[in-house]
Image 1: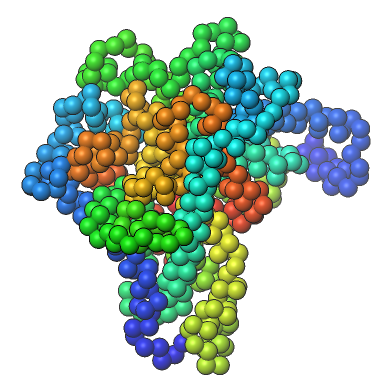
Image 2: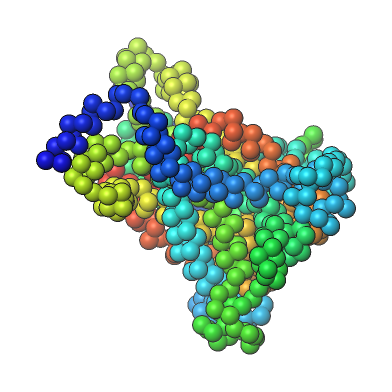
Length: 313
Length: 309
């Protein structure tokens, strides 16, 4: 009997605006959730916030008082940033990071898109096995590959200087070497992501284009790439962040401190100025600025990429 | 396209195949070969490098046992805590109106590098309570400040009886301090993926359970968890691989000092400090062997997905 009244009353009560007691009761039952969530959000944000605040404080203040004092006692400066950009070479390292990341990202997208098109829309013997093999390469630890690649670079170095961007033409002191390495390490994930997206495009589209006599290249550039922009955007963001945030590949394969990206520079600053937080905080924030901007501006694609990529594990 | 020449697909695949062969396939085989050779990759030494890893003859210079054990601690603790917290975040966030903002705040550390995160947390863990936030809280609570990254009360010594005798503590706190940084960075990933899994649960099932008199706790354990468990597996696999390959965080935060080395940082030391390519290669092979089961599981699951598509 009681069961029945609940079932009968519920639909009638719902469309009406909730009364004051109702909303109060709901508020009370939700309060623990709000408190837990807000505490967690604050806990998660404090470390980054502490870094940001500290990077703008006077060196003397950082060394003697906690960053929380700056909230009540305003005294900020941009001197740390000027110093770390000029004297500690973070300015050059910022450009190096861009010089490394942008071509490596473009390269991986183009090469992976070619391969993904073949996997998705061409028939050839062993197609599924080869694709599976590529996906399996996804979990190979980078460490497996570094010694042989390093030896290969060292033995095939081309010592010609490259104008403008610096470094050798090829080898352990070259940008070409690190571009290709990053592109190769990003390929398994990129091919996987793009092949699945290309494969989900409607078949009719391709058949009518082929019937009209369109070549593969034309279909690829005129149909596949424009329609796949969401997937390509997600991939570009991922590849960009991976390359930008990488330390290990640069540490091993780029044996010239002048060419090194920001991660390399910061890591050596930590070794030499471990407790000079006015330098470290400013340097870290310079390296975080672009990823954070991309993250907040393009979060939608970022999340899509994670969801598309993590289906495979 | 009908009437495509047989070699056309291979032409499209060629750049990718060339890069993968040079940078992943050939080096993997070559590293396996090198693991059976001496430190300059000249003389065949059989299984000596692997024997060194197992017997740990030089615990003061390269403590292989400590590194292996640390990876073994990282994998369950990092994965477990990250998945659990990510799940709790996803559940909590789905019940409030400011879901997007809450998720952004938790998710944000994923965008930054391990290197930047290391600087952030070295600052948080600083021993001086006037500078380090964590120790400021600790002293506020009336305790003495802790050297979070240096505490060597390590489980290695009583588990393995190697290395110098020291005061023995039950937990190596500096490892936990490092793992916490990893959790801070990756909870957002677990949250986003799990939250997408939660969104996929139809409200009808939940309503039906409530009408049948199930309480929220039963709904969580009997309905929600079983439905999202495949998603949890996916997240966990990704995190396990991450914990296996882990390098940057340990390298920048402690440089492997105070018994925090993991296999990947020890590998780097063999390569550039000890100049022992053979042992370095053997350590890399250990990592590869560890990911093979994960690789097999992933391929099985992928084939299953393809068949059921």
